[in-house]
Image 1 (cartoon, rainbow, N blue to C red):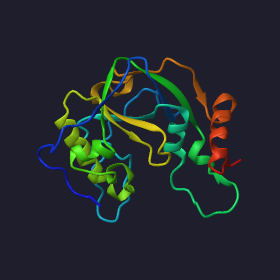
Image 2: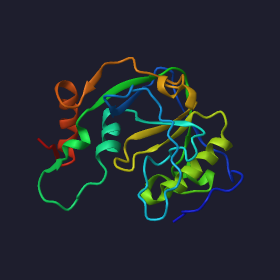
Image 3: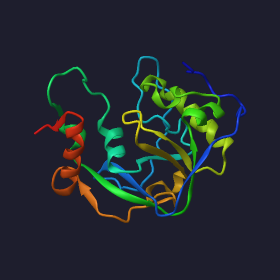
Length: 221
């Protein structure tokens, strides 16, 4: 498996996919955070023996802010709640309250046309990688972040990355790059123009419970 550092130069031609201005992007986020806010937190490789924090394509050094989203509710929920599950437990399984309490789901919109590097299948091969880049476990994230920085350098006009969710391969997801100075307001790439639904009650809870049924999950009381 290619748990290797990226080369200095891209061995092929990055594959670019576009999202139109106004494209809905679904975010699951803490209620205390603006839904379109990017994360500017640097995520360097942890010390030996420490756990890996953060997401797959976070910035290792804080050179760019980052944001993850799905193109629909199913993708956003799969990426957020479809991880670290006990697949062998019989019957319906509880999704722990701390995983969904005080969270909300919001549909944001792209403020302009977005150019995204496709990082799976042939797109990964063009970069000198394979599907390890989007399927490895958390211990591979520090290397994935090196690749994200390299791809950003190789594709200076791109706004981020796109691939199919590891948890639900039918669903496309994105990671966007932005200026840390404007991270709180969406980096000029996203607007939160739609209603925000808390996941603890009402429409938000209905959407989440509908998703969880297919995953053999239910909300822990």
